[in-house]
Length: 370
Image 1: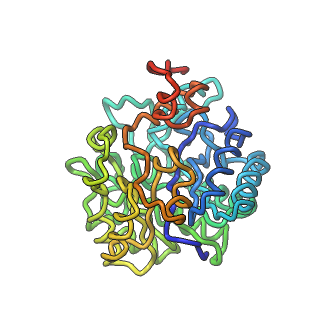
Image 2 (image 1 turned 90 degrees about the vertical axis):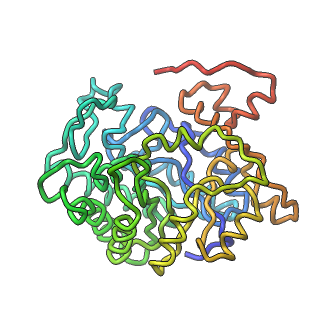
Image 3 (image 1 turned 60 degrees about the horizontal axis):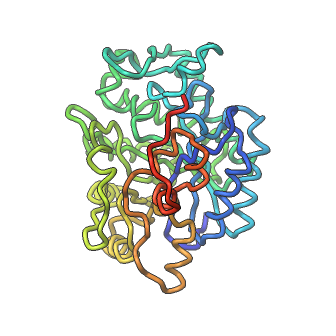
């Protein structure tokens, strides 16, 4: 896959899917703007591989063939603008916050282990369920290829199912899926192998990878690098570096407004360590807001691709602006208020950026709908 530049739109949950997970006209509007923005690679928002793998309302589905028409529309609108797009496929595991609202359909959250005191209702998966979810990943990837996506990205970060298997904090199993680091990474490797079996060896397979945990007793960086090496040997083509089980990580970084002269990419050292250890492209996400910082990271050999999320919520045309010579930093100030999109209030959704919403004279906190 040849990209027009080294910028990547990191997967961003936009709450625009309908209740079934299908792409809507609102989704198409979002991806039309992104596709016309000269971004090297666009990664879709979260697309769940199984009905019990959904995390929030409004997320895309890749779990049935009924999703294919909408996914094709998403691909077509990005391609018509000259962009390329990967479908991110995910299972939430115990972080399936939406699952309690699907109990009437017999859907519950599944996890590698049952954790006491967890605020997320869940139960431990059986071996058969683990094998079934591995096949669900493969089937979702096959749908991505059938729909015309240029690549597929596994979501192996942010405390979702793949992170839960890798981390000793959330994987307490004593069978072949838990215990040693080798057993805890088995799920990752089997997912990669199954996806490769379904899409072939000529289709780009990426992963957003929580290379280490940000909580005591979790996965350490060297173990994450070892897992990355094994995944690459099994068929991963590129790695986007992020966090795994976060502890209070997001609370420490989200909501801190970023000054252009005080830019601090969150995972810079982790990406540099991985890049020194592997030969596939490495992308860095988190806290990058300026062209100068992006160029500095590339010049230092710390990453191959610059990945951004919230800057493209505020400015889908950011890269086009930089290419035209206006190199002022992104207008996004890292306020974190775009997370209010998760509650689904329509007037916020239509604005898509909290700062834009406030600029129109609106105020207040959106009420939670579910």
